Image 1 (cartoon, rainbow, N blue to C red):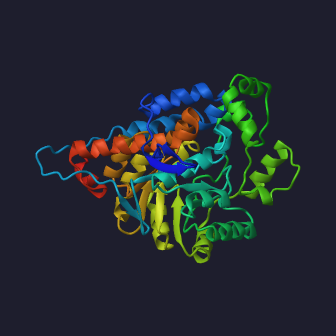
Image 2: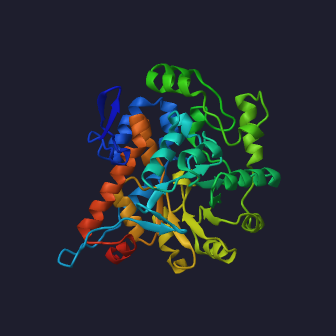
Image 3: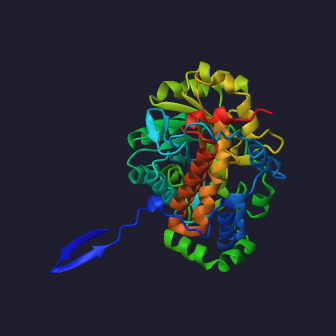
Length: 399
């Protein structure tokens, strides 16, 4: 509460701390997902919600995380649970951050900016994607330069260097390079909805927008979603078809060891590789001097027959202490995050859950979701008697 005097009158204002914002009507990610589905056009919701092929790996990710069991200890001395976690010299308020997501603005207008602000409010790391709908500079202003940048490695090294220079100049000190998208995925729902490469607008999409006025009016106010970081490099006047072809050509090709070596030489900050799921490539990451790896399968959006991230994480424990091991894909709740940490992750990132939150609750959705996840994780730690995040592996029940 604040009290100010204006023209002889005292004005009392109640200041709401958004980091504590929580709407009890939506106490779970499932509830947020259902609300988001109601508010979003079908094509936008399916872009957020779906995976590749039959979506088997999408389901496997969460299912196998939830197969993990934790051992509680009720009679030990317990001084309280502390979720603060140190990573690359920064101390965050919880052991999770915002995963990179492309085209957030298509799913909900200004969602990238909303989530960046919420992550900053909650003192959580925010990863900006190369193909986001907010620019490097916009996000840097929101979070005071404290963000990570995920690089889709361009075919042209000159473009790569320009992106790195902009990220560094804006304050970014952790670069994430993407390994798990060597090809565009086959996603039947996106193909049907006209969101594949090249994209197209369908009559069905237009009808869906007409029946979801809140989404449509918000888009109208915000402007059509664009690849804001890439905007200055994209030729003007391209049709949707030719824009798709341009992006396909610009970011085609696999991430190679030579490209990683070149990035290690060029980038003076923390260098993290995302998409590592086997010991052979974890070994390469360590030998090339990378600072961290994110165990990821792109949220089940690339390879349906791949293993879950929690399963892959189990095979990388020999690298603990040699490189920071993080994980994304499949975590929808505080218990999911606890299970990943208990299984050996040093840190985690969530993507769909906060996006459901923003799509369900608009500007308040990011703060709501981060508050919810922190409360859930806090409860798990208190229930099992774990005082520090790094002690969660001591509660893992090995089957």
